[in-house]
Length: 452
Ligand code: PHE
Ligand code: NA
Image (cartoon, rainbow, N blue to C red; front, top):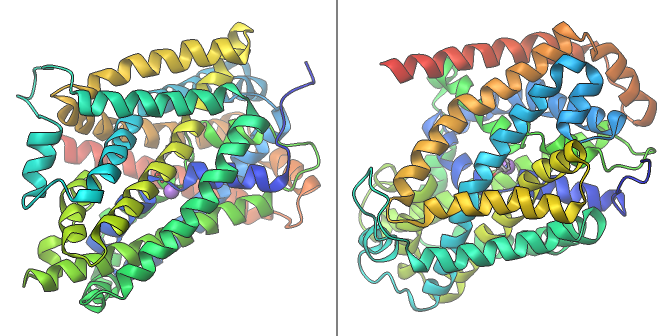
């Protein structure tokens, strides 16, 4: 049993962890979340959330994986028999995400191609929902949309290929290719964006601090929510990835590197996105606040318009959507690995079978998002996963470990026995008190907005 798969190098593990963390959340979620929640002032709650919850939880998850050397369900089971379900909860949340995340990657593949000739013409929004997605009536599935289905199949083929090859030869290799490429592409895009006319207006809007936002509880909830989603914590991912670490591996230092790399990428994305939005505002004689948005609307409705107005449109459009594809694929591989590892251990089957059954089921379910009702369905599922699935998963995790199993002290010792940076009592305070309090409050806020 002790011939568990391992990462080939420390860098391999780090790139895989960064590959999971760096995703659509950095590119299209962070910029607008920051802008909406205080602009420059958002960095205060954001950094606070990174240091009190993000990095401490990363350290916790790396420690759990490293110590118990199992998938999330098995690792929780080793903490306490009654806790296996927390691992499965997190795996299921990841599984659900893995049914719609690949659909967005599929859109991005098609849009990289559409970019070359700016096929959306003069009406990018109409093109996206009408011509491309063929969006139908909400509630009815309608027909399959071939222009979504075909790239979706391609996404799964690539994911299965790397997942099937295993940790070192598959996941590590994929991230060693994707992440450096992504970094280069992204730098080119950001440099182009900040040298466009109007970039400064965009950056002004992005960084202008609205200090009164700091007094608003919602802004803090947004900061913690962003950190959780962005660092892929409480998704079973980081436990699974850390379970493949060799015994002599630094934990704390690796967590800091992952956390700061992800946030740097986020900041870079914020600069690039708002520079581009400033350009668009100036071109169309609008204010940045008229064009600022995030998510699907930003990537597939606003960005195509920006691309069309840019010098070198085809080239930069292609790079932008390629960056979404690379960032998305490395995240998709990480979410899928949670249930592949879980199934392998639970049912004692080979990796190949686990990929076939787990990934196969996710792939089949993902077809529902390639229908004419795909976008509506995606919005609904994403809303519930984001507002309840993740917050609850994180809450269960910290409460179970800090308050029921009372494991923090022994985990601290474990992390300290292999790490350069020694953890102090602050780490236990962050996980035992601050994080549960914030997550509990977050759940209540989400429920409250749901009923009003
Ligand atoms: N962390 C990824 C991002 O920022 C998103 C993600 C969440 C990926 C959960 C996998 C699982 O985009
Ligand atoms: Na991220």
